[in-house]
Amino acid sequence: MCGIAGFIDTQVSLNRAEQLIDTMCKVIRHRGPDDQGVWIGDGVALGMRRLSIIDLSGGNQPIFNEDRSILIVFNGEIYNYLELRKELQECGHHFTTNCDTEAIIHAYEEYGDDCVKHLRGMFTFAIWDRKRQRLLAARDRFGKKPLNYYWDGHRLIFGSEIKSILEAGIPREINHIALDEYLVYRCVPTPNTLFKNVMKLPAAHILIYEGGQISTKRYWELPFTPTCQDDEATAVEHTLALLQDAVKVRLMSDVPLGAFLSGGVDSSLIVGLMSQMMSRPVKTFSIGFEEDAYSELPYARQIAKHFGTDHHEFVVQPELVAVLPQLAWAYDEPFGDASMLPTYYVSKLAREHVTVVLTGDGGDEIFGGYMHYKRESSLSHIPAFMRFLLGYGSLLMPNGMRGKKRLHNMLYDHATRCVHSITLFPDGSRPSMYSPDYFAHVCDHDPFERQLSEYRKVPHLDVTKRMQYVDARVYLADDILVKVDKASMFNSLETRTPLLDQHLVEYVSSLPSTMHLHNGVLKYLLKKVAAGVVPAETLTRPKHGFSVPIKQWFRGDLNAYAHELLDAPRARQRGIFNPQYIRNLLNAHASTKLVNYSEAIWALVCLELWFQAYMDEPTLHSEQIPRVEMLRNH
Image: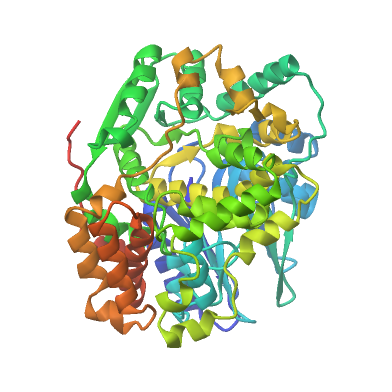
């Protein structure tokens, strides 16, 4: 696992190129503390930071082909590289290392841009073809590994993290549309970033630089079309076999390996399968809270005891939000999903014992685990006039009152209802939330269109399949996987996701939606698969989710922190928000339990901390941000 960076700039001097690629790599040292490698050509530079996982002594990058006319920097893991290596050797290619990186470069020689279709794993990479003066960059099918780029018509600058690109001295200008969308989605949706002209390469895409131009192209789709009609017994048997293989290939490692364990179906099943395959107890890591209603530690302990794991846990307390300035820097962009906090701490805990962990991420999207799948499936059977009456009744409820948003959304069609259900702020609040000057930048923009356009691509799918399709392309790619990648790699920890294995998801997504949601049972197929592995009570207890008690925190000690941060002179001077709107939001949340604006407040806090890290202190590096030591409370 690594971080990569590079640029193509025909006007840069050799001395400047050497200095720039070095700083671009060093600023992401946390992604790869073990080694740094760079290559500099005529107006081209590639670099990487390495976290050694496989072929510890021989996998240093960049790696070249036989005649050194092609080179690669790579971030990720290719789980089928041994099979691919054998196939390529039979085609006449010669290998000098035992690492997976070299398989990619020979696959490029053999298959061209289609080399990505032969890779099973998680990856971003950049290949420079010196003879053709051509760059191929790629991102894996789900976007587990990030790749950002800046293009101004003559300079292409790219990297695993935006902070590498910023080292090139590009203008730090705000993308107003991206900020407007952040306040809806809690993250900045692909392909935008909050920096103007810095883009994210979408998942399952390649980027090509050739002849002074760039282009991007999608190379893989997961349509969720129900083309497979296997019966339940066959589906259970085949899914289990695919999942066992997905776990097995992800145990490939030359360094210590463990697993995140929440005690839910997904992570418990992964740990159970790992226990069957490993000769020693699985090292498991869990996070919890002092507030019992939010803590899954008791469930994780039950699973750890059942499988005899070497278990470790940590309790997150309100004062530990002091780490947020660090995370604002680590994430490159504001990130409003509060579960970033426990994800950071469980990653920090795990890194004290292992270098690689397996996770249960992706199970909800692929197997149908979210409560809104069940809710929307039920609503689809309610007559339209009844939904309208219920929605109209919501107008009589005060803003922020529990259930108001859900009832109000019944006034909309299915796609609009799903998109509006995720909003942080009361409906219609954008004109009063923003300052008049700032609202002028975004008044003609519909922030919901980003996700609505995804729903419109699959009108032929049923309600459940449509939501899975959109969640996989938006929520999973831009929130879940970003959260885990940033938090784990900031701690130099690699995460692997068996439930997002290509072969597994292609099969499961082709099954009818009744295999995902059956008679009101979420994750129906996965629970059938897990029945022979995990304790029965794990399959029947209510879904918990990775939620954080910020509602209580912002009514307690953190309310003063939020006021101090969001109502400070420099926050007001940014001219983005109406100060009175922010004060009213904070006061309303603290003064009555009828409303809950905690997620909106969290998003605003993260946005302000991002401004401080990237706009107020543009040369700040991670080592200059005050560190918060882990409290060993468990």
